[in-house]
Length: 376
Image (cartoon, rainbow, N blue to C red; front, side, top):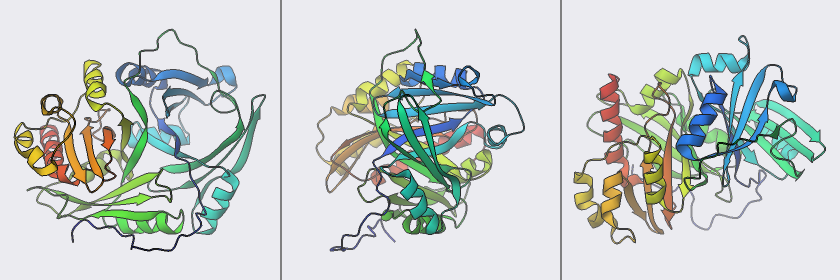
């Protein structure tokens, strides 16, 4: 099987029962939110936004909220052991707990998804303060990951009720990161198709691209992936599962060290990937190394691009093209000691795909890192 679109031509337009406006925020459960916040500010260029903790009435956890353009991260740490947050960190290490999605009606989103088989995580709840009200609801997805539906049309506060403005004298400049392009989940053996069905049936998503082990493989390892998208294309969730290979795939390594299914990487958009990656590297962010041989033939494959090839080669930025344009992308090394979560930086010049032409170079680079860790 080759890469295919699963949406037939002339498909009748159907009402979207779960209209989503994009990603509201991504929440990480981490061992030390204060230090993690400093890392994301220093290395990735986030700004201080909001805080909740003992000073705001919370007795069991603290949360720091960071923002860069339309990209919002929440870093949450438990203050004691013996609770869901502490257990999550003990099992998984630092990782993504919440993929929060913007919606006009969080109550309807919960009702529509749970009646279609979604397992409730949070029944609709209204949070209020002098700045207005926010309605939250949520459902479970793969592993311990959850989707929260966030309705904030009646709210003018800094982030959510219960948070106060976080003022800091230390706010490094932005690195040009704009918004979440897509989030990729890793699931277990033979679990990709059941989760595809979940997103189709429970959330009304469509499978827009499929990659099998002929598309995503090297001499040693392979995986399969399907890209799920909501109706307007604002929310995209590729889902990976392992495939048979001579050695352990990157998905198997992730599942081993994360101790289960979860978010593998967050892809973040930029308008100038060369400037952004140069800045990120100067701040200490490490990226996968791509051999110079990749660049000897890449323009033969992708054709003309607006950028000079030399800085792309210098920085290790990959290039791919589809019928609508091209894209530039690069992948960080894992941002924790466990080889789990990493980031993708992506600039789209018309392309709506995910870099199929780069899979071989990317996966060989990942395998070199796995081998250095003794996990291949």
